[in-house]
Amino acid sequence: MRIKKRLSIWAIMIALFGVSEASAMSLTFKWGPTKSCFDRNSPPIRLSGVPKGTSKISFRMVDLDAPGYNHGGAVLKYRGKNVFPYGAFKYKGPCPPTRHRYRITATAYDKKGKAIARASAIRTFP
Image 1 (spheres, rainbow, N blue to C red):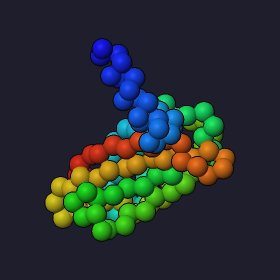
Image 2 (image 1 turned 60 degrees about the vertical axis):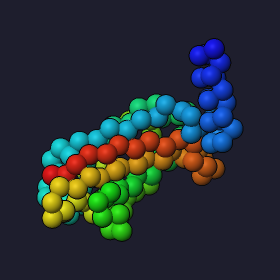
Image 3 (image 1 turned 90 degrees about the horizontal axis):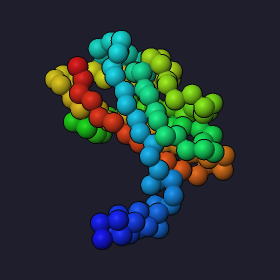
Image 4 (image 1 turned 135 degrees about the vertical axis):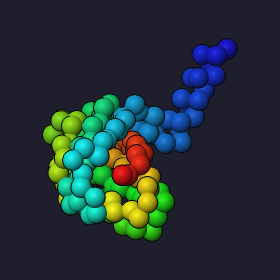
């Protein structure tokens, strides 16, 4: 019975979001050498489970404690490497007056520009 229930959940996810949204893409990041107050270099980011057919990956950072502030992000060509080192792209780094929570989201796109997977992670800064 348990297997049937899991299969039903997967079927619903695939029907609602497409196969890609049910993929196992995941993201982790560390602040690493990120300097306080608007370091222009992105933190080190690691992806896993990037789906076949990924052409580009977009990154976006949101301050969960000040969601109206635009930190920006980047769209990078995907060349099969899942590690994006410190400074892989430019953005507006964190500079909170107190500890804030930040979410970085990566979205994988195929050659036609269709989003095929998404992953995110949350960390506190500083």
